[in-house]
Image 1: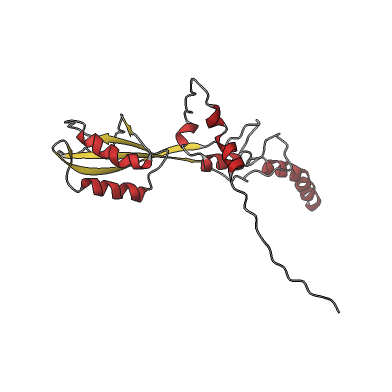
Image 2: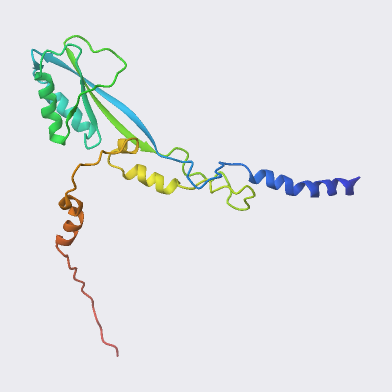
Length: 211
């Protein structure tokens, strides 16, 4: 009986090993299953209005808020004004975001709470790209009996792409191409590299005689 139990265990051992190797992320193709995901966060700032523009002191508060957010390229700024009475508020907000090289968007996203009377809401939409589930070493590379690509396939390049892209929205919908091509813009980076001054470092060493 004891010898028979050993024989059964020896026979089932390879099957158990194969079953253990089949766990983890499955990928029977060459394309990575880990792709960049773009998420959006809406940041709001409610400011008081006075007449056809922002109330006194609100422009300074708005400027400080934008500075704390480190507003920059890729951010989308819009105004939610339930009672638009003119372009004064829009011009005041535009004068603040123009310092960061941005333009006001025409459409404001829907926010959670309604705007109170006599107030205007400035909405900054910020996009972020990330690759969920990376790194992924849930599946062993060898032995592989099901011809799966590595579970970590594409994690490095896609994570670097998500971290380096200036405007994550371009991962969802790319920029439209221009009707004309400007060679000066296409070769701007190469021209800057060639015209950069060459810095030559100096090193001082000590030499001694031998006896």
